Length: 189
Image (tube, rainbow, N blue to C red; front, side, top):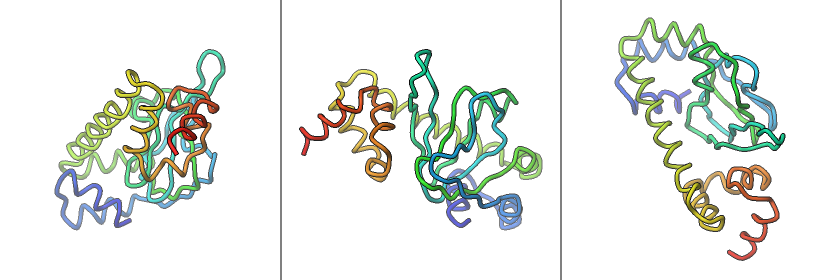
């Protein structure tokens, strides 16, 4: 739980009583590799914080192909925010790429923190803003670069992730076939 507290305190100040309240609402949970944290067609019910492991956000395109939008690794929040905040069905899946250990808050517990802790909404807003900026920064280069450059950029941005995700997910994220990715990796070595 210390990782969660340290993470939150990057975005604002809380006193010990507020931290203790947050910790009473937090529950540890394990999600096995390939299990879903949230699913398309369902309303996201929890906010998670990844202590150990990697998750990915993915969807199926109109051809039925699985597309990985992005990866989420340790010390990051994981939630389908639009679904969670607006009580609408999600259009994407959040899936464990590896066995994951996470801390979760139910919707009711999260709302209680928002209602009880002065400044919690500001901290949450800062966390969301940072996540959105990171998401755009990670996706933007992928649009204009060639496949080799995209792969090299991914290696640079996600050194802790690159060797822990299946090549099929990585190829999907990069927008290339798995055979193209294998060729690129072979040429780089």
